Length: 447
Image 1: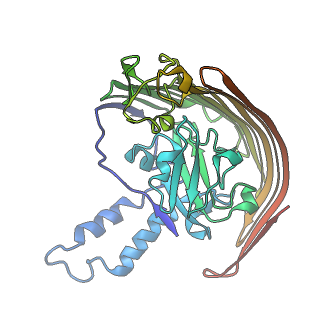
Image 2: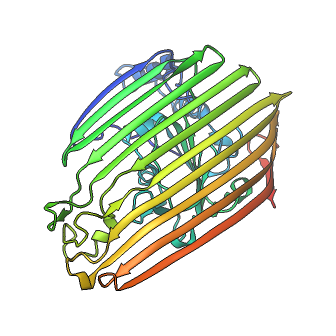
């Protein structure tokens, strides 16, 4: 089962300005090509045309053939090998880069709003939340998720920092159902696989700007192209977002939940030969927000609060990822490795009492730090009707939770501090044998 999201004509609040420069690109993202246009036009032009004889009409068989041609070009890496989406026995939803632009997708939680049987529970603070697939989810306090996400091999397996920005994305694959064989723990309900657009010989540039209500201002830029033709390529993108909040702080005569962030990403790609490819991805996000939205719900009037912090509340998390990957092909056998680093830091001072009465004071200072270092090595091949893959994976988690809760004008203070360290190791294998066009034998395992 494959869902291809196609949504156009979305109305944006505010004024959107967009300039795009593209040279040498195909009509579709990498891995997706258009069906022969002359055949498409021929079939469409004959449809319902008066006087068209049966030989020129669009027959059901022709429609099926056209649909197969369009689907045949959709390639995915859901099973960590490049495959035709029709040959992957997984329920999934695939979004191309054009789909994401049509739907105005800016972050991971936006994708879940367009995916059947999937939702996202936002915990209020920026980046905090847990995905839900087919009713399966995990508590934020478990420091894990039931649905794993991988951004170019970087694992997101915690609700802290799960929601991340998306820019210059080639494709997103949402896999539903248990995926533990190839993706390990935290994949009981599914996997979100995000693939970034690779820089190539084609020069591309894009600049966008947006203004809207509540003093909303958005600007982004992305540039990609060759440094040395056929050998070395670079892609750079950046984004700035600012918007006033909608909750009024009467003690400051100002808005309480303003939003602001800066985003930057660089993607380096090296192809010294036809058989070898090396890539380095680095991405960072820094938020400068006001009070946490979820806390404001507990106020008497969620749109109007009073605070004894005099506007001193804030939510300033940051997220950084990096991934170094390499792939080498020898005699139809592909060797792949990826080493990644992920870090999410939460720095917030939250108002919970919403009053200027010192005796009712309830403030929480959070200085949390979550880190994950991972590495994976895979060897695989597809020869004729047989494909196989074996690999090894390891990661290390270093998590620090440091919260200070102040109550009753500072007369009661509670410190919540604990560290969590974990090391995971796994070996996995997967193989498939296409006995015929309609019957395949598939097996796999992990330890």
